[in-house]
Image 1 (tube, rainbow, N blue to C red):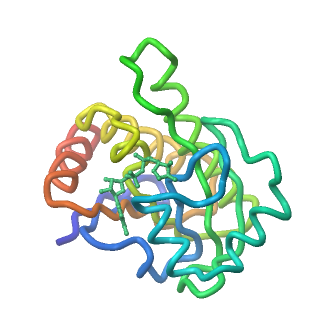
Image 2: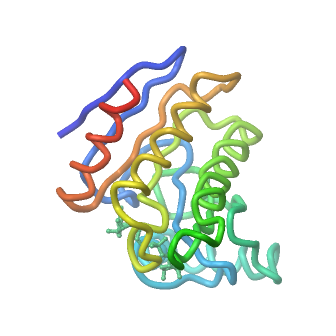
Length: 180
Ligand code: AR6
């Protein structure tokens, strides 16, 4: 299942699947501030990339990174060359700058991807698992933020959301319909 739209020179795709299997230049991770691995997609990425991923994070980012930002590492055993470790917000009711921080997490990944020269980037639904961001809003923020970047000055020609469940995939499809 794939839906896609073209924006300026870039393609925005939605697919169902596992982000660790994506043969793109960079994949984003839904990490936490400590950057020491975890559950969910973070756990899956660390398992698939191998132990060198954690070694690099420990060495280069001993203090982690704040919510709303991202850092880049190599992809090691993953098909992707780079991993963009983004920290989305924990949902705390909506009055704690959650939307701004979620936008920041996606934008930081997009900026890093451009700095690295990545042309294709895949994203999970950041903050929409354990961190509890409300599903329709999280999908809208994600699609809107990535679409805005593709419409601007960027080398990215493919941005793909890789959604694990059918439910999340359907929410992103609705969000994409909203901006198309
Ligand atoms: N590929 C794509 N999406 C996935 C995969 C996968 N292999 N596995 C899970 N998802 P979550 P968060 C989906 O909880 O809410 C970790 O412990 C999942 O179904 O992974 O940002 C970190 O270390 C959901 O839709 O991330 C942090 O502590 C989405 O990915 C915390 O969880 C995000 O769910 C971050 O929580």
